[in-house]
Image (cartoon, rainbow, N blue to C red; front, side, top):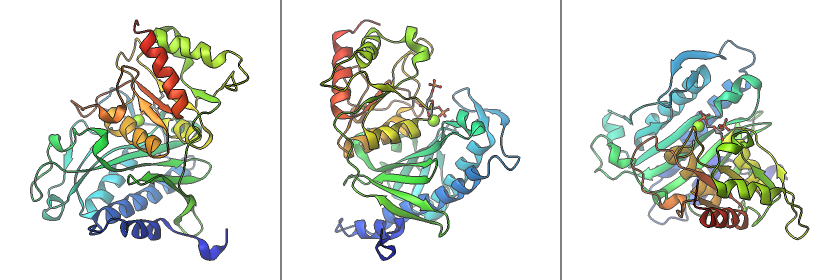
Length: 340
Ligand code: AHM
Ligand code: MG
């Protein structure tokens, strides 16, 4: 790319703001602050093997899972960046049992709330495998000038104003959407800027990859078992058998499938009867991005993910996301095999 054509994340955010005639720059400011926090977390993730930041901190998060130090670091930095933006009145995060309402006068006037998984795929931190941050932005429901309340967070995914993720991989990338397509930015560490590298991402309507933790096979619903067998059956027309690819980091598995075409599945299992992944800060943002890129996301129980009305902050749902034709097929398998 010609160096004079490099578009930084901030330039892009400002340019996009012009598409919204009444925008006052608040969302742009919020997104820029997320970009700053992402760079700070990138810096720490990159030296994770060098400093004594690895290993478990000893505490247990609200999901009953062990908290690693880097999770806490990411959580704190994203929270302070969002607070500093002055546009956000509160957050809900995987690391916090309850919502965090910001108290300052500036923050109470904030129009937006953010849900986030500050460091997803945390079991991969210690082994230098890609991890990520996932976020969603909504307009608050309660009036400005007051503290954020839980009701501000329990909104359907269709009401997302923006959503995105940061992948800390062989490069660090931020991918986000404000509901007008999906764009990806790669961090150039030498200049400390996210640069537009993947404009207007469209996901293939079908792919050759299925991603699922097959170790749970015997615990899957019948529809999923049959779909896995379908993925493995040879068929020239649909390029089957598909390849199985599973990293165990949602952001990394999703990102690969978004670019190459494929399907990611986390169904209900006996250990996780309603699925493992969290609606508010894992499934909804990814579903929003998938749909904006031409893909699809459902729960396999007859619902589009974005239409589900949340009833609690850390609610889990079964999750099937990816290339449209592949999701349609697994959805059909689920409908035709309703038994568990
Ligand atoms: P985490 O938020 O505790 O990191 O868990 C979420 C992760 C996802 O990134 C990934 O898709 C899934 O858990 C993997 O779960 P499993 O190990 O059961 O396959
Ligand atoms: Mg997570």
